[in-house]
Image (cartoon, rainbow, N blue to C red; front, side, top):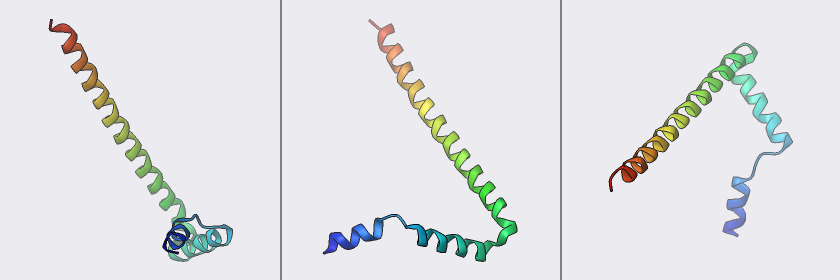
Length: 74
């Protein structure tokens, strides 16, 4: 029974739930502020992806540097 409740809590919202969510967002922010909100979310996602890619490239560069040092020392 516990697993059934956990599964229900983690499931994605259906069509009527999405409509309710959109209506609540419209009530809170109004029609004029929604584009600004979406722009802010887009900027945040872009910054997150840029930071993620920078960390990934730094890790890969460090691994390549470590491998090149191993090959250089006999």
